[in-house]
Length: 336
Image 1 (cartoon, rainbow, N blue to C red):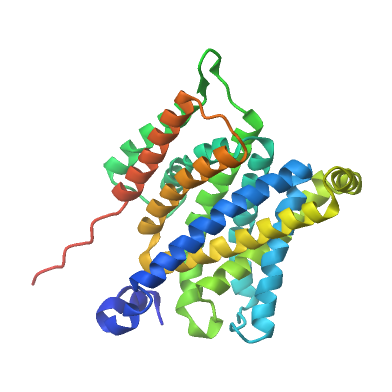
Image 2: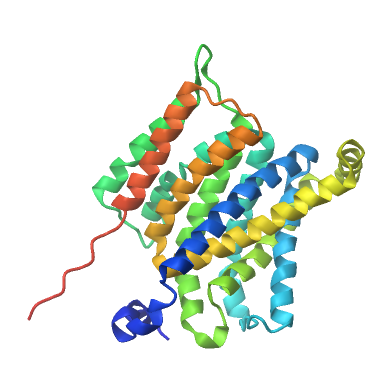
């Protein structure tokens, strides 16, 4: 099926879209996505608090998803991707961006509060707008969408102002979260055309689940050099110290469960997006951050000052507005 054919699927075969778009299925995907994402942030924070080898944690989380994907392919539950060397080469830049986005998020959580990480990640539309505008082909948003970036930036700035202290930023966490935002923006820009082409060719066996699985494998391969360069020399000592303080069982449990939650929340998110489109998915992704901020502040007893609450609300509201304003109106049909 060609890319053009897929865009007209609703007109050509409306019956085939009825089942995937059922409210029960969509609701199940959203619940799974939200719940697993929330639990991922909890287990990831616990794991990064236990062991200060955060690139290693990021890599270990990806391994969990790889094991699951291989089992699905070997048992025949899912069709094995049928990719050429050229297909894999086209996926490598996207996998690298996925590696940096995931690694940046893990390192940000390990360096600071989960709530602060989520507030900074609300700035992702700012990075996406800049990358979309500068990287050809240019993606020009409506003026209203660009105006919505102002409250996003302003809200994050306000959240960083502590009463009686002035601007108080965890610079390390801020930089890692910003790295994740930039990488996610490039992944979205570079990946859309590649993934659409792969999905449109039935011989490739690249549905939403397999697209994510392949990117997960490439992301893991790209993560290995970061582990080797930044942590390999100290990893045995760091691991032994963590085991001595927290116990091997607790360490393994949090790393493995964070990997399980990470892989499956992304699978749910990918599946949901494939049914409803990027704009609706982006809106719900914004709402998800509210849940994570609230839950993490309770679980980890993270103090939420007045400016933090107001600033995060403004930033998340701006992100929601940006998602809605970015939806370009459908072109009017030409009349003869």
